[in-house]
Image (cartoon, rainbow, N blue to C red; front, side, top):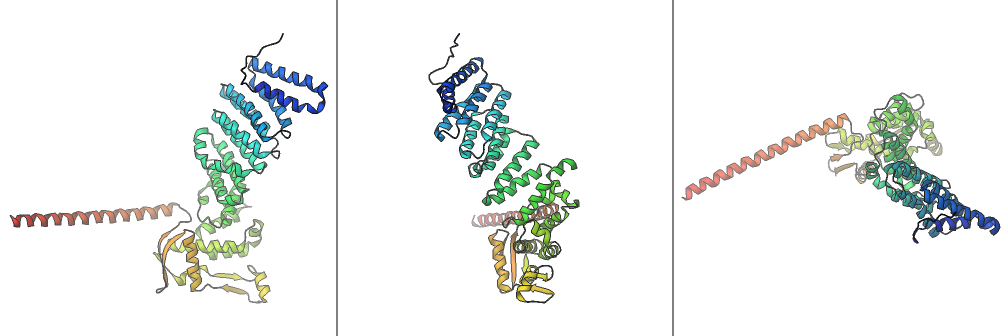
Length: 436
């Protein structure tokens, strides 16, 4: 007996089933194709009558995936919009999650076949879903598809909304780790997003605070990666990596202790300490792709920042020249340069003159590391503001003292104004009495 399925003329499910089935079996010939197409349509009708929406989605996805390379992007979008709309028929959040997993997993299986279209389908599915768990799962599938299919630019704009997404999804720590690390990996592939990649890698490492040593150990490789990315970044001069347990574990690690030492040099010491480290560990530096000249440039700027932080508002040119000077043992640091120069000296010193002092100060100002004025007459730099490379207990104490001083100055100013106002009012009162 034939079952009549109550559908409106606008219900596109059965037409889509027939359209994709016809295309899937087109090469088999009409004698083989027609029974198969009829069978698929009847099975689809049965699923609709019984409310077996997951089975219907699975049936439609099988045919849709077969015709993916054969139809236009417009037709594909229509086909998968109908399939994705099946999720709206599910009232149970667990069923919706299963539907989301089924559709998004199927779409993501072939990331190199029209990846931009597949990503668009996942975004459409995301917007049709209501459950936060379902949405998070689809978003993660979209991230991996963008990475594997090399269509990163299509998903990067969504990263600006991650904070609001996190509030909506309300996911646990493990899911947050997976999210942050995946985003960091996606951004790493985009050469213009290195700074953002480091930001999300840092967020990933922050999630290990308060965990035991076994769990923290999972982040060891990513901690090393974060240190190297920070050292390489030409426009990143401060970070909180030293305060993170995930990074702190490297200090006593037999394999990565030197990486931790390098980070500490960049965040707490000056150029001379880096040069000494590089002379002893040049092979290690090269193994991580660190360019010595780039590191010297960054350390000169960070050393200048350190001078501004530790001196009493004024830095003599002579001190800057001495701090930014490069002293190198030829046998360890610049053998290629000395060879090219035919130099047999065992000690090579690269001085900087007064003009170069001002050049480095301008570089620091341009990088927004310091605000200052150059007093050429007295050969000093007058610093009004300086960026801190790290912000720990010492920096908090210094800030507390500055705020206390500022509060005292404001209170003194208010007292002076009030006293002057009282004197002025008294004087006006006396003048009034004299007139009467």
